[in-house]
Length: 189
Image (cartoon, rainbow, N blue to C red):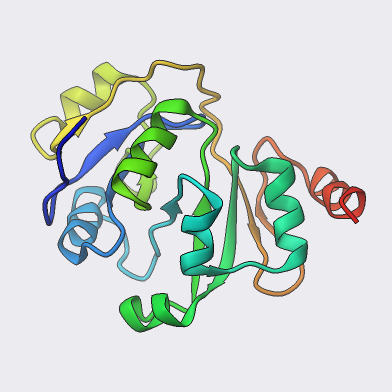
C-alpha cells in the first residue's frame, strides 16, 4: 500500500461478502464518482465500511443494545443503520448512516490505513454485483485507482441490514437472521 488516496479517487476492495467500490469518507468528489459510475439515485445513501469500533463511534451514536449486536457479529456480514454523531451530521447533513465492519483481513487493513470508506457493491444500480476480479477489472479498471484482488473466502451474499436508530428492525436478510440478532441482545445481558 503506502500511498494516500487523493480527492476523487476510487478503489475496489474485496470483503467477506462482495467487492466494494470505495471512496474516502468525507471526499465529496469521490462520492459523486461512485454515484456516476453506478448510475445510482442520488437519494440512496452510500454505506460506510469501518476497520474498528473507534471509527464507528466517531460517526455513529451506538446504543447499548447495538453494541451487544456489534460484539456478536462484527467483524462480519452485518450492516447497521445508526443515527449520526453531531460532528458527522455537521459535515455531511446525514441524520442516519449504515455501517459495516467486514470480516476480511485485507479489507480491515485498508480501512485502518485509509480510515472509514464509503462503499457499495461493484455493479450498475439494479444489476447483480460483479463477483470475480476478472469481470470487475474488465469493467472498471479505467475508472478506479486500484482494484485489490480477493485473497480470502467470500460468501457472495450481501450483508444482513438492520436499523438500530430506535428498536431493532431488519431491512434486508442476508446470512444473519432476526432470531440470531435477538439472541445476541438477550445473551449479552
